[in-house]
Image 1 (cartoon, rainbow, N blue to C red):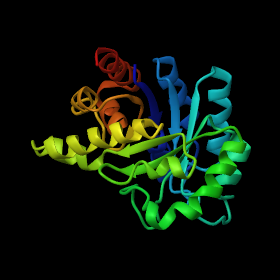
Image 2 (tube, one colour; image 1 turned 135 degrees about the vertical axis):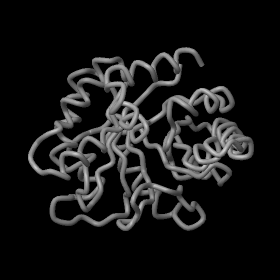
Image 3 (cartoon, one colour; image 1 turned 90 degrees about the vertical axis):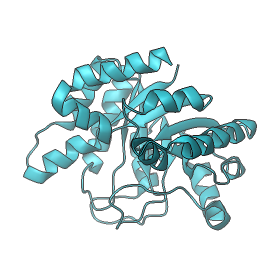
Image 4 (tube, one colour; image 1 turned 90 degrees about the horizontal axis):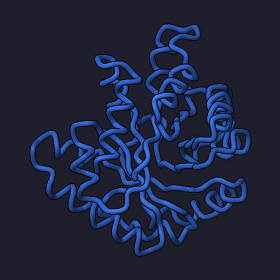
Length: 249
């Protein structure tokens, strides 16, 4: 069965908007794990717009104590700065089970594209090797339809399919082309010996169709839609809704 990793970035967005310590990121992650989520994901940005370095360490300790996956996302090329020691340094402190590398610039509101392997492979290779030496499984954020097999060439264990275009096409009632690209990419990744994760704008509305069509998805990382749905249904009930959906597909 595909496993669910809940991204709790949006909890930190709410906290930081007001200041102080509430809502509490670790408490929210604990509710998700108590409801049955298989892991927790965060994507700390260098500008600390949501998840901060201290959150990373606290969530890593929570996941370690619960025996579940902690998935840390970030741009390996972003330089350190005050409050952000750099992605590798955070991984060295937190020792996440999975490190997901994403090519997001500081100016991006959210991740919106995968790596350009023709440009980035040589720079990625030493970062991937260093993370694997820390004991991290390494996943690379990729565009559906792109050169997903190149991820194997830089030493990655998995890819994470960027599903934003699929979600937008699904909402518009025309998901076939985007879904076919995801399906083809998953098959090519598997042929290259890579595991397949997926994430971005997946929701209870579009997830079943995605998993029914795309083979071998090991993990989905879901944050924005899950927190949106939880505003109305509650966090525990929403996580359980996703788990029922995953169990049925």
